[in-house]
Structures are given as structure tokens and as C-alpha cells.
Length: 115
Length: 112
Image (cartoon, rainbow over the protein chains, first blue to last red):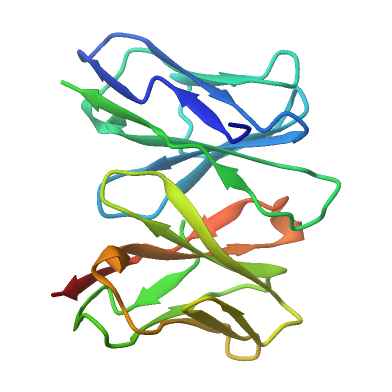
């Protein structure tokens, strides 16, 4: 399967704990995006990378959130000191920048529940 | 903030009928996409229509785009129970570095 993969698929954590999610994009894609989706809403943009450079962060991304893409391949999204409001589906997508307006391919998401 | 606004927010129809969902957006775009999401699952890309296109078909799906009105519609013909899902329109603009801006979605329920 050469699609976008995300791990874990589900994460339950207690408030105050740190969590880290991983996204493996399609191998030849140089752009990687993170989105967050809360219940009953559409996904909202969090941040994106072009290769290893993080080019934009949404105001939704508080200082408790950090994302990395160290070698321009997989990416991690870490949430420190989780809060109940962080409970959501975290979606990753990748695309090829060489094709302007190219389709983004989404992974299955990581569902986070903070208790 | 989300740019797309789907209408209606929820729709229930009988199996076999056609379902139409509308989407309006605010700023100029390069393409508009429709996604489906089954409850608690990931997004499935349905169709992409570019700003210079007016209509596109894919199987039972028909998408229209009116850039002068900043609106799009998704028509699902001969609906099936498996079409029950949330449908999102999403816009992409070069000026936003191809970030996808999603609407809140239309929850479609197909009645047997």
C-alpha cells in the first residue's frame, strides 16, 4: 500500500500527558499537511511542510503543539500537556508541490481522546 | 476559519433518489474538491474541479462550479445506502499554498 499512513489510529490519554503522532506520506510527495477535525466540523488546517521546512502554522497551533519533518519524509506531531479540548481526529495529507493545485491524499487519521 | 459553507447541513432521502448538496465559498480559488467521510473514518476524495471547468462527472457524481457566484453543487444520482456519509466541499488556492479549506459538511442519510 503506497498511500498515506498514520500511527497510531487511536490514542487515549489522560489530561496533562504528552502524545506524539506519526504520519508517513506518499514517498515522492514533498508537501505534508496536518489538519484537525472536531466532532461535527470539517477539518481545519494546522501546519504544513515543504520537504523538511515548516512553512506555515495556523493560529490553532498553540505552543503546546510542535510538528517536525526531520528528513523531509515522515512527520511527527507532538502535543504536550494535553487538554480535553485537544480531543479530535488529527489528519495528515501529502501532495507533490511540482503540480500546482495538486490533489492532497489523506491518511486515515489518528483519533485522540483526552480524559 | 472555514471558507466553504455547505447547504443543507443535513439531508435525508429515500434510496434511489438523487441527492444534491451545495457549497458556497468566499475568495478566489484554483480548484474545488468534494470529499466523503463515513462516521469516524478518514476522508475519501471524490472529485476535483478546476476553476476553468464548469462541470465534471465521475460515475454517479456530477459536480458543477460557478466561479461568478462562488458556488458549487454535488449531485449523487440513484443514491444507495452506502452513500450515507458526511460530504465536505473544500477549496484550494495557490495564494494559500494549496492549503485545503473545508466547509462544515452536509450529513447525508439514505433511507432504505
